[in-house]
Image 1 (cartoon, helix red, strand yellow):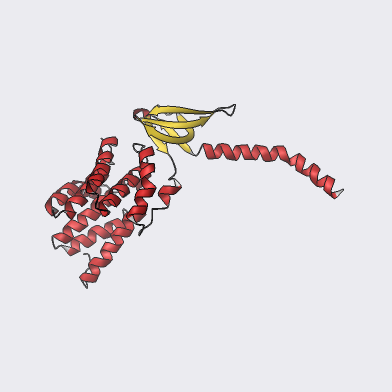
Image 2 (tube, helix red, strand yellow):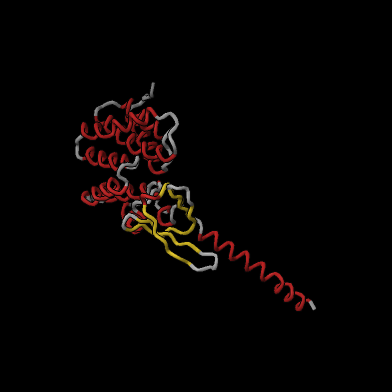
Length: 258
């Protein structure tokens, strides 16, 4: 009797279980979201960007799956979680080779998508190329940011990254001149959004390095601590700023900001 009763119970809950499973599946499929300029919201799964169009996979009422392209120019905003392959290299100390292996396919697939993590992945990929001595590929990665995000605040990421290369080449004044307008803009932004905060961090790190090169440790420390306290949204950049501040203090005992 116990066996029969157990089987009947399982049969009774099976439809409810299947409904719950279908709902869970639909929620997974609808993790991403596109909002068009006219306010229309399209849920689904973003599968890539090609020819200035975002391809999104949607599920109809009948359960069929369709892939529909939307022009980037028609899109107001996008919600898309960071993929696992990108997330796994978002900690300090990951080797450049590992970063390149993880991010190259993701950047190829999603470059141009108006989402913070995509731009940050592109910049991180360029930095990894630079760390490996592949400067031409680094410049190409930064140029791609400028190209696909032309006219947006994300362009400042490319400018700051290129300024970092100038700094490594010993062109301190050129690097400082590039990031100074971004720093000035940040100083006027009393309530930066998380997106802008991460963008400003790139500039402030290069700014601090340039000030160090000019033998201005106090101002350099202030730049690094600004990232740590205000523009900390990107964990890798926040960790870089903190380490640079620690190194600066180690070599300049008693150094503090006014």
